Image (cartoon, rainbow, N blue to C red; front, top):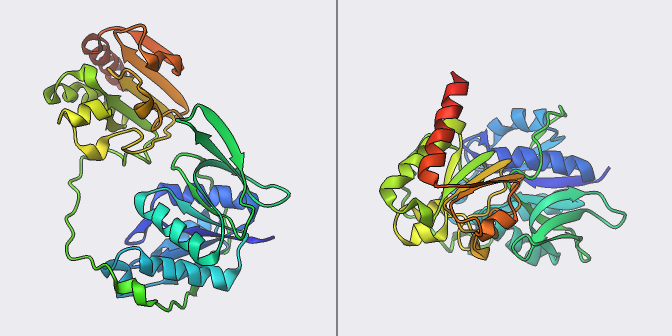
Length: 320
Protein backbone atom coordinates (compact mmCIF):
# COMPACT_ATOMS: atom_id res chain seq x y z
CA UNK A 1 0.00 0.00 0.00
CA UNK A 2 1.22 3.51 -0.83
CA UNK A 3 2.53 5.72 1.95
CA UNK A 4 0.92 9.03 2.94
CA UNK A 5 2.93 11.79 4.60
CA UNK A 6 1.25 13.44 7.61
CA UNK A 7 2.75 16.66 8.93
CA UNK A 8 2.69 16.59 12.75
CA UNK A 9 1.47 19.63 14.65
CA UNK A 10 2.88 19.34 18.17
CA UNK A 11 4.10 21.47 21.06
CA UNK A 12 7.29 20.10 22.66
CA UNK A 13 6.22 16.54 21.92
CA UNK A 14 2.51 16.93 22.79
CA UNK A 15 0.61 16.05 19.60
CA UNK A 16 -2.38 18.24 18.86
CA UNK A 17 -5.73 16.64 18.05
CA UNK A 18 -5.94 17.67 14.34
CA UNK A 19 -2.85 15.56 13.61
CA UNK A 20 -4.50 12.47 15.09
CA UNK A 21 -7.54 13.16 12.89
CA UNK A 22 -5.23 13.31 9.86
CA UNK A 23 -3.89 9.85 10.72
CA UNK A 24 -7.48 8.53 10.57
CA UNK A 25 -7.94 10.05 7.11
CA UNK A 26 -4.51 8.94 5.91
CA UNK A 27 -5.33 5.31 6.66
CA UNK A 28 -8.19 5.51 4.17
CA UNK A 29 -5.80 6.14 1.30
CA UNK A 30 -2.54 4.51 2.38
CA UNK A 31 -0.08 3.88 5.19
CA UNK A 32 0.57 6.97 7.33
CA UNK A 33 4.15 8.18 7.67
CA UNK A 34 4.35 11.01 10.19
CA UNK A 35 6.83 13.88 9.95
CA UNK A 36 7.63 15.46 13.33
CA UNK A 37 9.97 18.44 13.51
CA UNK A 38 11.59 20.50 16.24
CA UNK A 39 12.01 20.09 19.98
CA UNK A 40 10.25 17.01 21.31
CA UNK A 41 9.84 15.42 17.88
CA UNK A 42 10.92 11.96 19.03
CA UNK A 43 8.54 12.14 22.00
CA UNK A 44 5.59 12.19 19.57
CA UNK A 45 6.32 8.67 18.32
CA UNK A 46 4.34 6.69 20.91
CA UNK A 47 1.04 8.51 20.40
CA UNK A 48 1.51 8.64 16.62
CA UNK A 49 2.12 4.87 16.51
CA UNK A 50 -0.94 4.32 18.68
CA UNK A 51 -3.02 6.12 16.05
CA UNK A 52 -1.70 4.40 12.95
CA UNK A 53 1.67 5.83 11.96
CA UNK A 54 3.75 3.01 10.48
CA UNK A 55 6.84 5.24 10.54
CA UNK A 56 7.79 8.51 12.24
CA UNK A 57 10.41 10.69 10.55
CA UNK A 58 11.97 13.13 13.01
CA UNK A 59 14.35 16.06 12.76
CA UNK A 60 15.43 18.72 15.20
CA UNK A 61 17.55 21.78 14.52
CA UNK A 62 17.66 25.38 15.80
CA UNK A 63 16.30 26.58 12.46
CA UNK A 64 12.84 25.15 13.19
CA UNK A 65 12.41 27.40 16.23
CA UNK A 66 14.50 30.41 15.19
CA UNK A 67 13.09 31.00 11.70
CA UNK A 68 9.64 31.05 10.14
CA UNK A 69 8.09 28.35 7.94
CA UNK A 70 10.81 27.77 5.32
CA UNK A 71 12.95 25.35 7.40
CA UNK A 72 9.83 23.23 7.94
CA UNK A 73 9.14 23.26 4.20
CA UNK A 74 12.72 22.15 3.58
CA UNK A 75 12.19 19.25 5.99
CA UNK A 76 8.84 18.23 4.54
CA UNK A 77 10.36 18.29 1.05
CA UNK A 78 13.17 16.05 2.30
CA UNK A 79 10.56 13.64 3.66
CA UNK A 80 8.71 13.78 0.33
CA UNK A 81 11.90 12.95 -1.57
CA UNK A 82 12.66 10.05 0.80
CA UNK A 83 9.19 8.50 0.77
CA UNK A 84 7.64 9.34 -2.64
CA UNK A 85 4.17 9.40 -1.02
CA UNK A 86 0.74 9.08 -2.59
CA UNK A 87 -0.35 12.26 -0.79
CA UNK A 88 0.78 14.82 1.77
CA UNK A 89 -1.67 15.84 4.52
CA UNK A 90 -1.26 19.00 6.60
CA UNK A 91 -3.55 20.33 9.37
CA UNK A 92 -5.27 23.62 8.59
CA UNK A 93 -3.71 26.58 10.36
CA UNK A 94 -2.12 29.80 9.15
CA UNK A 95 1.28 28.12 9.23
CA UNK A 96 0.00 24.80 7.91
CA UNK A 97 -1.52 26.38 4.81
CA UNK A 98 1.70 28.25 4.04
CA UNK A 99 3.79 25.12 4.46
CA UNK A 100 1.44 23.16 2.18
CA UNK A 101 1.37 25.87 -0.50
CA UNK A 102 5.16 26.27 -0.56
CA UNK A 103 5.63 22.50 -0.76
CA UNK A 104 3.13 22.17 -3.62
CA UNK A 105 5.00 24.85 -5.61
CA UNK A 106 8.35 23.16 -5.01
CA UNK A 107 7.25 19.71 -6.09
CA UNK A 108 5.06 20.95 -8.95
CA UNK A 109 1.84 19.50 -7.56
CA UNK A 110 -1.75 20.60 -7.12
CA UNK A 111 -3.07 21.59 -3.71
CA UNK A 112 -6.49 21.28 -2.06
CA UNK A 113 -7.18 23.46 0.98
CA UNK A 114 -9.75 23.28 3.78
CA UNK A 115 -10.85 19.71 3.07
CA UNK A 116 -13.47 18.29 5.44
CA UNK A 117 -13.24 14.66 4.32
CA UNK A 118 -10.99 12.34 2.33
CA UNK A 119 -11.57 9.06 0.53
CA UNK A 120 -9.69 6.78 -1.82
CA UNK A 121 -10.39 7.16 -5.54
CA UNK A 122 -9.40 5.27 -8.67
CA UNK A 123 -7.08 8.13 -9.70
CA UNK A 124 -5.92 9.25 -6.28
CA UNK A 125 -7.38 10.67 -3.05
CA UNK A 126 -10.69 12.53 -3.38
CA UNK A 127 -11.24 15.44 -0.98
CA UNK A 128 -14.55 16.93 0.09
CA UNK A 129 -14.69 20.70 0.51
CA UNK A 130 -17.33 23.26 1.43
CA UNK A 131 -17.57 26.02 -1.18
CA UNK A 132 -19.27 29.42 -1.49
CA UNK A 133 -19.65 29.93 2.26
CA UNK A 134 -20.55 26.25 2.61
CA UNK A 135 -23.60 26.63 0.37
CA UNK A 136 -22.21 23.82 -1.79
CA UNK A 137 -20.20 20.66 -1.18
CA UNK A 138 -17.58 19.74 -3.77
CA UNK A 139 -15.45 16.65 -4.34
CA UNK A 140 -12.04 17.28 -5.85
CA UNK A 141 -8.83 15.49 -6.70
CA UNK A 142 -5.43 16.75 -7.76
CA UNK A 143 -4.76 15.99 -11.43
CA UNK A 144 -1.06 16.87 -11.49
CA UNK A 145 1.66 15.55 -9.21
CA UNK A 146 1.31 14.32 -5.64
CA UNK A 147 -1.76 15.75 -3.88
CA UNK A 148 -1.00 18.20 -1.08
CA UNK A 149 -4.13 18.53 1.05
CA UNK A 150 -4.86 20.67 4.10
CA UNK A 151 -7.66 19.39 6.33
CA UNK A 152 -9.81 21.37 8.75
CA UNK A 153 -9.92 20.30 12.41
CA UNK A 154 -12.86 18.12 13.53
CA UNK A 155 -13.20 16.62 10.04
CA UNK A 156 -12.60 13.04 11.20
CA UNK A 157 -12.77 11.06 14.44
CA UNK A 158 -9.63 10.25 16.39
CA UNK A 159 -9.31 6.46 16.16
CA UNK A 160 -6.73 4.22 17.79
CA UNK A 161 -5.08 1.89 15.28
CA UNK A 162 -1.78 0.62 16.71
CA UNK A 163 1.05 0.43 14.17
CA UNK A 164 4.82 0.02 14.24
CA UNK A 165 5.66 3.71 14.51
CA UNK A 166 9.33 3.06 13.77
CA UNK A 167 11.34 6.20 14.43
CA UNK A 168 13.80 7.27 11.74
CA UNK A 169 16.02 10.34 11.65
CA UNK A 170 15.26 12.62 8.71
CA UNK A 171 18.27 14.21 7.03
CA UNK A 172 17.48 17.83 6.20
CA UNK A 173 19.54 20.28 4.18
CA UNK A 174 18.36 23.84 4.66
CA UNK A 175 18.23 26.11 1.63
CA UNK A 176 19.42 29.70 1.35
CA UNK A 177 15.94 31.04 2.12
CA UNK A 178 15.58 29.09 5.36
CA UNK A 179 17.11 31.87 7.44
CA UNK A 180 15.39 34.73 5.68
CA UNK A 181 12.88 35.55 8.42
CA UNK A 182 14.09 35.32 11.99
CA UNK A 183 11.91 35.07 15.10
CA UNK A 184 13.11 37.84 17.43
CA UNK A 185 10.71 37.33 20.35
CA UNK A 186 7.84 35.21 21.60
CA UNK A 187 5.04 36.01 24.02
CA UNK A 188 3.12 33.07 25.50
CA UNK A 189 -0.61 33.29 24.92
CA UNK A 190 -2.54 33.80 28.13
CA UNK A 191 -4.44 30.63 28.91
CA UNK A 192 -8.19 30.83 29.45
CA UNK A 193 -8.51 27.18 30.35
CA UNK A 194 -10.82 26.71 27.36
CA UNK A 195 -10.15 24.57 24.26
CA UNK A 196 -8.46 26.04 21.20
CA UNK A 197 -11.21 27.59 19.06
CA UNK A 198 -10.47 25.73 15.83
CA UNK A 199 -10.09 22.37 17.59
CA UNK A 200 -13.00 22.54 20.05
CA UNK A 201 -15.80 19.99 19.85
CA UNK A 202 -18.24 22.66 21.06
CA UNK A 203 -18.17 26.38 20.28
CA UNK A 204 -20.42 29.04 21.81
CA UNK A 205 -20.36 32.36 19.95
CA UNK A 206 -21.82 35.78 20.61
CA UNK A 207 -22.64 38.53 18.18
CA UNK A 208 -24.08 42.03 17.92
CA UNK A 209 -27.03 40.98 20.07
CA UNK A 210 -24.76 40.53 23.09
CA UNK A 211 -24.69 44.34 23.16
CA UNK A 212 -21.44 45.00 24.99
CA UNK A 213 -18.14 43.53 26.17
CA UNK A 214 -19.43 43.16 29.72
CA UNK A 215 -22.28 40.94 28.51
CA UNK A 216 -19.93 38.35 27.00
CA UNK A 217 -19.71 36.95 30.52
CA UNK A 218 -22.97 35.07 29.95
CA UNK A 219 -21.55 33.58 26.71
CA UNK A 220 -18.42 32.52 28.59
CA UNK A 221 -20.50 31.03 31.41
CA UNK A 222 -22.44 28.87 28.96
CA UNK A 223 -19.21 27.84 27.22
CA UNK A 224 -17.57 26.90 30.50
CA UNK A 225 -20.57 24.79 31.53
CA UNK A 226 -20.14 22.80 28.30
CA UNK A 227 -16.34 22.71 28.24
CA UNK A 228 -16.54 24.75 25.04
CA UNK A 229 -14.52 27.41 23.26
CA UNK A 230 -15.82 30.97 22.92
CA UNK A 231 -16.25 32.60 19.52
CA UNK A 232 -17.46 35.99 18.34
CA UNK A 233 -18.92 37.46 15.18
CA UNK A 234 -17.13 40.16 13.21
CA UNK A 235 -19.61 42.76 14.47
CA UNK A 236 -18.75 41.94 18.08
CA UNK A 237 -15.02 41.99 17.36
CA UNK A 238 -15.15 45.24 15.38
CA UNK A 239 -17.03 46.84 18.28
CA UNK A 240 -14.16 45.87 20.58
CA UNK A 241 -16.27 43.53 22.69
CA UNK A 242 -14.08 40.46 22.18
CA UNK A 243 -10.56 39.75 20.84
CA UNK A 244 -10.00 39.27 17.13
CA UNK A 245 -8.33 35.93 17.88
CA UNK A 246 -11.81 34.61 18.72
CA UNK A 247 -13.52 35.83 15.54
CA UNK A 248 -15.38 33.18 13.58
CA UNK A 249 -15.98 33.95 9.92
CA UNK A 250 -14.49 34.55 6.51
CA UNK A 251 -11.97 37.09 7.86
CA UNK A 252 -11.53 35.21 11.14
CA UNK A 253 -11.22 31.54 11.94
CA UNK A 254 -13.10 28.64 10.38
CA UNK A 255 -14.53 26.13 12.83
CA UNK A 256 -16.23 22.79 12.34
CA UNK A 257 -17.25 21.56 15.81
CA UNK A 258 -19.73 18.87 16.71
CA UNK A 259 -21.96 21.59 18.24
CA UNK A 260 -22.07 25.31 17.42
CA UNK A 261 -24.27 27.64 19.46
CA UNK A 262 -24.80 31.12 17.98
CA UNK A 263 -26.23 33.71 20.38
CA UNK A 264 -27.32 37.10 19.09
CA UNK A 265 -25.79 36.47 15.67
CA UNK A 266 -27.86 37.40 12.63
CA UNK A 267 -26.13 34.97 10.27
CA UNK A 268 -24.49 37.22 7.69
CA UNK A 269 -22.66 35.39 4.90
CA UNK A 270 -19.29 36.45 6.36
CA UNK A 271 -20.02 34.59 9.60
CA UNK A 272 -21.63 31.59 7.93
CA UNK A 273 -18.48 31.03 5.88
CA UNK A 274 -16.61 30.25 9.08
CA UNK A 275 -19.03 27.89 10.82
CA UNK A 276 -21.49 26.37 8.36
CA UNK A 277 -19.71 23.01 8.29
CA UNK A 278 -20.45 22.52 12.01
CA UNK A 279 -22.18 19.19 12.61
CA UNK A 280 -25.07 20.56 14.71
CA UNK A 281 -25.98 24.26 14.80
CA UNK A 282 -28.17 25.94 17.42
CA UNK A 283 -29.17 29.60 17.18
CA UNK A 284 -30.66 31.91 19.79
CA UNK A 285 -32.04 35.16 18.39
CA UNK A 286 -35.07 37.31 19.13
CA UNK A 287 -35.55 38.09 15.42
CA UNK A 288 -37.50 35.20 13.92
CA UNK A 289 -36.50 36.40 10.43
CA UNK A 290 -32.75 36.36 11.09
CA UNK A 291 -30.84 34.58 8.27
CA UNK A 292 -29.11 32.32 10.81
CA UNK A 293 -32.34 30.35 11.16
CA UNK A 294 -32.06 29.23 7.52
CA UNK A 295 -29.19 26.85 8.32
CA UNK A 296 -29.70 25.77 11.92
CA UNK A 297 -30.66 22.35 13.21
CA UNK A 298 -32.37 23.91 16.22
CA UNK A 299 -33.52 27.50 16.61
CA UNK A 300 -34.72 29.40 19.67
CA UNK A 301 -36.61 32.65 19.06
CA UNK A 302 -36.08 34.61 22.23
CA UNK A 303 -34.00 37.12 24.15
CA UNK A 304 -30.53 35.69 24.67
CA UNK A 305 -30.34 37.44 28.05
CA UNK A 306 -33.19 35.22 29.19
CA UNK A 307 -32.51 32.05 27.22
CA UNK A 308 -28.74 31.67 27.69
CA UNK A 309 -28.70 31.93 31.52
CA UNK A 310 -31.57 29.43 31.73
CA UNK A 311 -29.71 27.04 29.42
CA UNK A 312 -26.53 27.43 31.47
CA UNK A 313 -28.42 26.81 34.69
CA UNK A 314 -30.06 23.68 33.31
CA UNK A 315 -26.72 22.30 32.10
CA UNK A 316 -25.10 22.94 35.48
CA UNK A 317 -28.05 21.32 37.28
CA UNK A 318 -27.86 18.19 35.12
CA UNK A 319 -24.13 17.93 35.71
CA UNK A 320 -24.89 17.94 39.42
